[in-house]
Length: 279
Image (tube, rainbow, N blue to C red):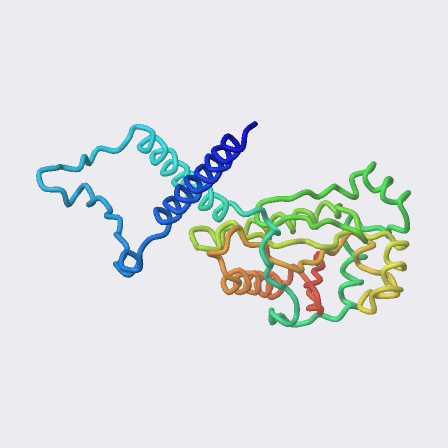
């Protein structure tokens, strides 16, 4: 390559470099804004006016079919839920609400000596001393003892220290008292309230075991061991509308009435009313 060719080659390369530099400089100028442009406030985006403010446009009031269906379903569910709540409130299972107490702290009834209770128990026509389960089976076989179940105005509690049975005449007394109690509450807010029987016939074995744990239980011959007595400890309300005022007042009136008529003997205890039939 001659000297002239070499000079032309170098000049072409220098010219190419100059063109590249000029092009890059123009690009940088285009990318960088001038201070005047930056000082201007930014352009704010505008939001469309609500449809109900647009002149000449009527917003449709009809709801979508899906929304109507959902709203109807929710309304029906709410009504049904309210009805169920009312049903539950008016049909509360007995024993699920706080019971009303039936004992010497809440009911004022004269106390009959326990010796009179024992004498009355022994003098009943079908009375006999129940020592153990064999005597229970014997009493049931000859109808000197009869099973007792829930009845009108009363219910039998879950028994742990006695058996749900009584002498036939004592069962009749319990049923009569239950009916009288239900009649007294009929037509009131307390209608449906029942008194709860917490103890009935005890074998002598059960009585001795109970006496070791409960200081109120007699260590001698109990009238429960003759099938002659039962205990009332609570009154169970059917709903919250019935407070304890009327159920307590009516059970007190009932017990005093039967006691004054000489049909029962009563011992008000710390946790119950002990009732024995007189004949």
